[in-house]
Length: 289
Image (cartoon, rainbow, N blue to C red; front, side, top):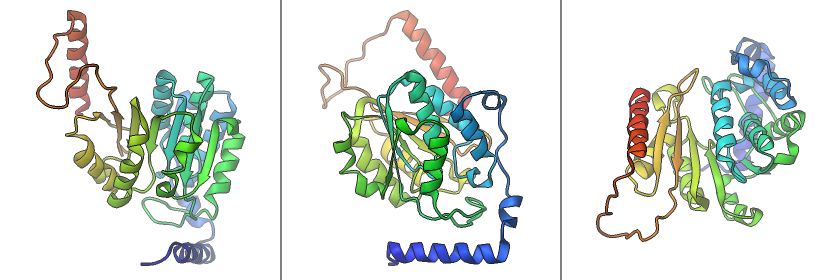
């Protein structure tokens, strides 16, 4: 097994080779995200910071797209979490989307955990290089004016799992898992962190469609740890522009008087709620989730 310091040295060597042979040509030719009108017209520091990041090839496809980020932000403004934990920060795109929602709400901190290893060209996942993602993320978050809403942790997520509860004032209200996309790493992140999520709290998985994104980990977690479990409620959403997909998972709060053995007596909801349930089922069918 190659030790982590040796892997980092190997990455730096690859960066130097890429620089000497390609210069900035590879980065210049790489595609960037289109900026939607909703983001393009916002006159805030955080929106301007996001536009600047999205204009660089480092953001695509590794970071949340503008459409995915807007969805995440809208969810958080409605959910109003006090504590958010993000596994996988990269250069801070998703972190800024999250922190902007917390700022809109007037409360909350996001703890973002990442190794921040050097990024080397690895098409189609990365088409350019970045020697220090940690410094890039710090700078981007500062430019967005949201440093007071963010705590960055340069660490393996597994190492932070025992530390993070001591840094929080309560359980996690919203957990974004977007770090190691290999099966082993993604399962480990889910198993270590989902017990830290509050009853009634939410978990989001990114890159859930292997045929689109090329990663198997998030889909494996859904199919083997979430989909058939009574401990979670799941909805899968298509995303733009690549449809890498997002899964939103809720940990239901325990119901009073619930028995762990035997069937649960079904109580017929009022007619208004039956109508809402039918409408939600119709939406789920349209989204094919």
